[in-house]
Length: 268
Image (cartoon, rainbow, N blue to C red):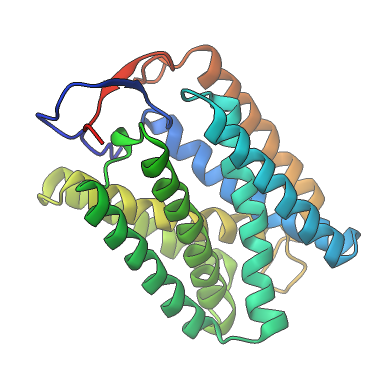
């Protein structure tokens, strides 16, 4: 479990945190949300006109982010709804970039990696920290969600690149990303890698890991199990919603802290 440490020795200003505690349950829900977003996006595009599916998902994403930004503290249902909508809409955008615009996946991966690096650079230049424990102002929250959306875009095209263009297939890609997500945790625990780069490195990989796993279950390709996007989306959504409910009712159960807990933040 990678939990970026809070900024130490910062001037005392007590504000409510806008993101959850980073526990093992956080990582489980994050991977489930990415898998659900992948297959549910495909389900919507297949059963609805693409313009309605993409437009509706975009509006739902905007609405969820407005509610998240207007909330004065972290609320499990609000936060995770926004994450799920980023996953669903991000999948649609990545598909548009690949299949409609026709930008090669390798080039898309490079572009989104550069965009993520630029957001990190601007965030650090402005706030002098990339810690998720410091998300206590509107400006930092804006940087945080811009980063989240960039990691989803990067992870989506990277997963499509390995499974499709590099011909690894869904199951080998799932195994590959399962190994890759363990590397930052191991490097942080035993190799001296700082918590913040370890956290964000693992966060990027959650997207292709969850998406590759659910694509393997849902796809009718020769390397898929053909359970269908609708059934797989439902099968992933049920445990995800149950775990979010547990997190909302008992945030301390898995090592987290109540949503009303406050943190020390830099004066901005």
